[in-house]
Amino acid sequence: MAGTKEFVEADNAEAIITRIEHKSRKIESLLKQHKPIEALKTALEGSPPNTRDERCKSANWIVVHRAMMAIKDVDSLFSSLDPEYYDILMKYLYRGLSTGDRPTCDQCLRIHEKLTERAGLGCILRSLADTVNTV
Image (cartoon, rainbow, N blue to C red; front, side, top):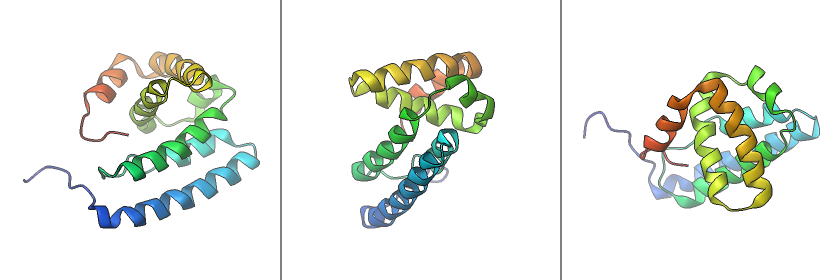
């Protein structure tokens, strides 16, 4: 069908997993350098991959979660996070809230509040309405 995004076939999932593993190593390095905002930007880049493979989505969630949980100063996050990342971050915040894990939910709510102030309600609506690019 013309105009629709093509999804990566399952046999390419291994290549996506390999890229996510590389991204994970880069994120760990940034976190060791006390650069959590750069780590989160790196985690959000290329997300979500155009795949329906749940292993890929879960692997990418793990790296985003790791970087997100390292953010201590939420205000400074939004002074340096480009608006192009807002919608994808909102999707990951909702994924984090769905875990039911108390520390994850607390962090997601802190970030959600600041993100909504910065990006507006449209960011929430876009992230909930986009059923194609799910994280």
